Amino acid sequence: MMVVDPRQKDDTPNPGSGTGDPRLAAALLTRFRDVQEWSYAPGAVIALPVADLESAFIPMRQISTPFVKGDECDKWTAGTWFTVLQEHNTAGVQMAVTRIGDAVPSSGAQHQRQPEAAIFSETLITGSATMLNQLGDPSLPGQCRHLSDAGVGSGEIQPLSVPGLGERSWAYRITGSGKVPIWHWVEVIQTSRYLLEIRIPNQEPSPRTDPAKLLPEIAQEAYTKAEAAFQ
Image (cartoon, rainbow, N blue to C red; front, top):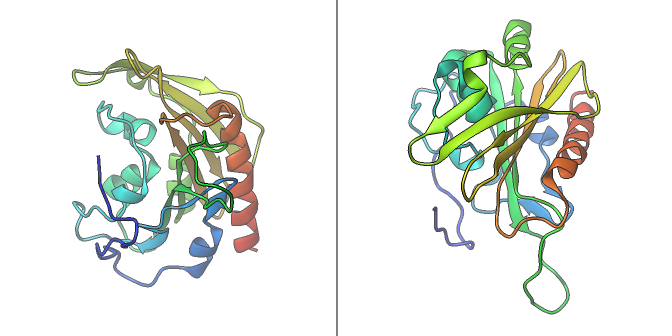
């Protein structure tokens, strides 16, 4: 677990190779209900290609599952950001990433409370139509349906029903065994201009609202803000 001083900001340099499109920065959520952008590592835009694929700049702003299944499954288990870096690390591709995880300060008395909303990460990607169609393809490879890892046990990728957004949208959850019954709730939205992904991880304390219900609500708000930024 990363332990950070909340008064500080991360000084890891942006590994991108150019100037980021300001529309991507404007499209990212900075708050959802009672959680807001992580102050230690706020949202950022990365212009590819990235020379240092080992940089922690993007991973610290994203949330992935511990399952390692292979290249075909990385989009599902690690996230679209990982697939972009591995398969589309070329000029013309840009990626905005953020992690919403700081509690909104309360004006009342300080006390422990169960959050209404959930910690989550958001990815927004622009590039060629071919790349966006590949990332937005909801077809799950058969070998990715069942997951296993010696350190975390087994799990499955199971589809979820969500309202349609953009030109194509779909969602799924990644189940687990043992102490973690569900690792992630994920929704992907594709348009002709960008692809957007929301990932909600299992967390303690759990939000008061079921993450399966929060997921489409977060996705709707993220999509609305992205559409406004790309007008």
